[in-house]
Image (tube, rainbow, N blue to C red; front, side, top):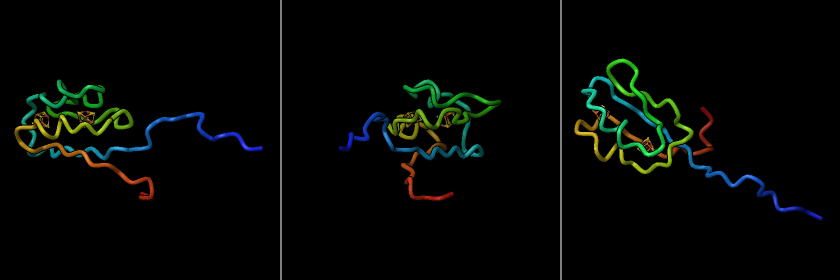
Length: 80
Ligand code: SF4
Ligand code: SF4
């Protein structure tokens, strides 16, 4: 007899969040918009402090006036 192995149903999607600090002007829009508190300021620019909480909504990427932040779905098969 087998039990369904579905005890944890957390989403498997992982986010790769990149911030080009040389393009970022530190306006804070991305930090304000993020619904999951993924981004926090560290000095003059944001850092993804909780990338595991990212839901890939792309609000940060779509509203950054300087195209300084990008979010991509990371495949689990990528080893490194
Ligand atoms: S994609 Fe959405 S959840 Fe992820 S860091 Fe950007 S605003 Fe936050
Ligand atoms: S919205 Fe863009 S320019 Fe503004 S703080 Fe975030 S990454 Fe930097």
